[in-house]
Length: 286
Ligand SMILES: [Zn+2]
Picture: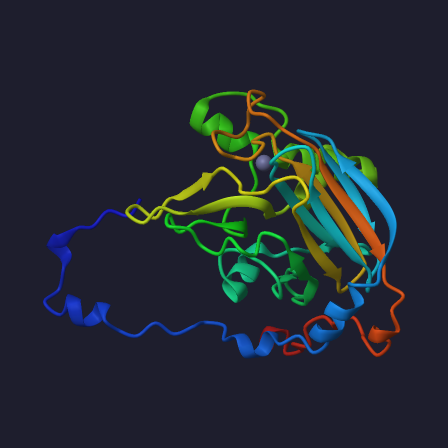
């Protein structure tokens, strides 16, 4: 928490504080050319696969470009931690921080998940979200955040001096390890900050600390994505359940999550092309 030391305050402090905020990344450049066609195409999809993520575990799934997938709450309120990679290159992975800088603290319909440097292109576009009614509540919280990281055993040890083995970080790593036949330590280097699916979070108004509260998600709610490139995804059903009390424990009620993958044969998107990687070619002036 930031401490304020008034003894260092200059005489013109109020004037300095009144400079105008400038949006760092104006929205115009993220205009989605085929948005209307995404919305038409999603109405006529064929389901080709379904994966159930058991509570306190993670599973991998692949989605080909131009197809759709959705993550759905079943049985009870449950939060999921999502990692995504380029299916053909694990180094290109979801960049939570840049996505936050572009779209804001929480994602919903029309927002995109951007990939890491030097690629920086949309990996998915969110095409539907049944929790879009939530907006921001009186605590300043919303759902589907890109401000948290993922629950992990290291922070748990640091704060509570407790060994807990089913954090999303561990679950995601184990799923990737099994999928790609990597050692745990090699797989761990690829695991990254997540999209916190269905998680309800914010920053406290007084201390600006990260907080969570019970997710408003209920069985039948879902968030749906369009795959802009071939994706390898990993989803962990967080040991925090709905994250209304604590995470990193076996005490909380946890429920499975359902992933459905849909083939898109729609002619509506016949002229659609996957986004190119960044065309920055200056190579940092070397
Ligand atoms: Zn978690």
